[in-house]
Image (cartoon, rainbow, N blue to C red; front, side, top):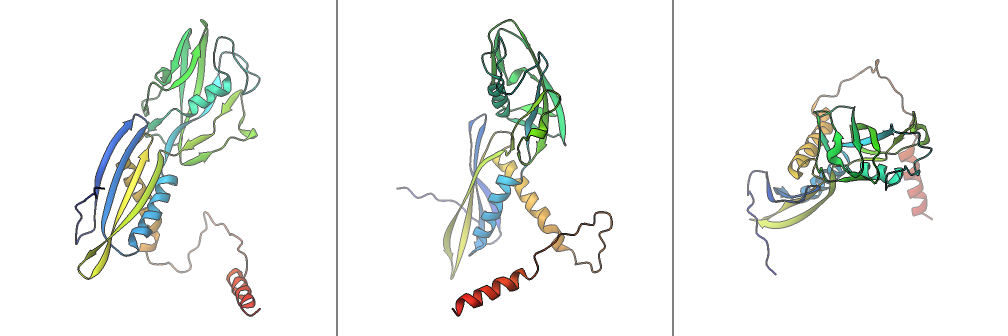
Length: 268
C-alpha cells in the first residue's frame, strides 16, 4: 500500500486543491486540504462546511411545465405521437442541469416538430441561463406533431415539493432539487509538529457540473461567513424591531425542566 504525501504549510493556515477532475458533464470532483489546524478544529470546520455545501448553495431548476398543444387531463396521461407519458417527460425535465445568474424566476420554452428526438438542446433559454449537458433526453416524437412547452425556471436552495395548490392554469409543478453539490465528505489527518499535534482537514466535493467544486467551496465559505458576521458587531441595547417585529413563543423553563428531571432520575 502506497501512502499519499501532501505538502502542507507548517505555520500559516492555508488551503490547496490537491485533486481535480471531470468525470462527465454532470459530475465534477475536487479534493482540498486546509492546514495546519489545532486538535479539534478540523472536525469543527469540516462538519460546518459539509452542511453548508449540501444545503446552503443555490441551484437552478425547472419548476413548472405547461403544455400548449392540447388539454391534458392529468399528470399520468399519454399524448398521441409521443413515446413517453407526461409524467416521464416531467421527470426528464427535472433532471436537466442548468447554471444561471438569475434572481427569482424566468421563463424558457420548447417548440419542436416530430418525428424526432427532443433533448435539452431544444430548450430556448434566456441569455442568463445555460444548459450544462445538451444531450439530456426529454422525449421521443414518433409522429409529425408539434410539441410546444412553456417552462418556468427558478434559482433557489434546498427542495421545492409540489402540493395540490401548485396546480394552476393547466400547468404542472415539478419537485425541484436545488442542490448543485451531489456529495461532500471530510476527513482528518493528525501529525506531529514538534511537541504538539496538528491536523489536516481534507474536503471532497462532487458537483453536478453547474459549478465546479472550487466554486462550491467558495460559495459555502461565504455563506458561513455571512452567518457569523453579526457576532463581529457590538450588541446593541434596547434595539427596536419596528419594521419587521415578530414575537416567537418559547417553551418556558425548558432548561430548568430538563435539569429537574435529570436530578430526579439520578436519585431514584
